[in-house]
Length: 144
Image (cartoon, rainbow, N blue to C red; front, side, top):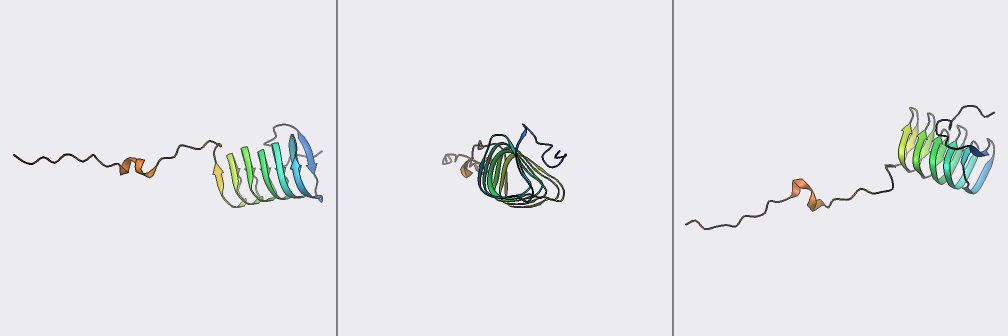
């Protein structure tokens, strides 16, 4: 019925909700499962599975998801615990945080991207850098 379009590659779980083309919604979305947006949405999204933004979709939101497949336009920051896929022709303005990122040719992306898991790597103080370590000073002994 819906054909093979953005989202078919990241689908973990079934499609639970659809915001169809021509539909405009403002508010917060919190759901269990996967959502596909082909219309216009403005607000916040909390989705434990996959957010799919179809080619006609316009989303102005802060989103926290497991996976995201973006074929349309996203304005706002997105955090995906697993994977974000930016499909050809998509337009993203905002910051991305994810463990894995796929960007097709022809994507517009303006923002920053932070990769990796939530765990931070241990930081090293500047004085601990190997190239900056000083040799211990030797005691000066007067010649005999």
